[in-house]
Length: 235
Image 1: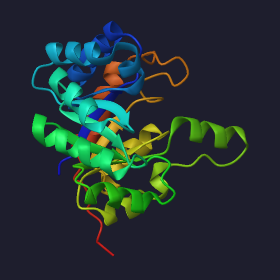
Image 2: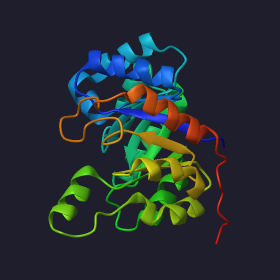
Image 3: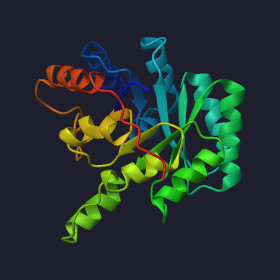
Image 4: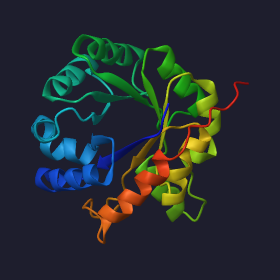
């Protein structure tokens, strides 16, 4: 699979999200993500606005679904989302419901292994239940809390190769990656590269990062798109 660049619109205002999305499209980004802050602030309205503005572009709705899976996935798919996110820590029946709704309404399902006791087993669990992608995710609060306590901040790169080797579906690494680390993800076998906070979105204010972001994004996209995904050998 050729690398894909996704921008996470972790914003709280649809107008700013639309402006940032347009800039990202000009820079060469492939997928748009209605991040969780945008979903909370704007809901279905925000996804519909993104779909109206960007017909034909994949849109990920980062719902982080834990219950009521069928309805949540159905609503977002009907609003224009092409991908929805369910958590591995949800009940297996919830994940199955999201997968079924995805089939019924034409959306792909991304399963998120955040806070799984065994991240590799969590990824495999999601694949076994029918998810189309795995999001290997170290959470925002977890990273910041551990760092504030004076310990090394965990990174999704710590186990990324093991997660990729455990599943046969595409993997995305999320959570505090530096720009250099994000660009390297295809070399770990993870072709879905997501750019969000703090790379393109200010991690404290949840607003678009300052500076010449479009030029920076263009260079990032070129660096990612020029790679081939390295598939690790299965153990």
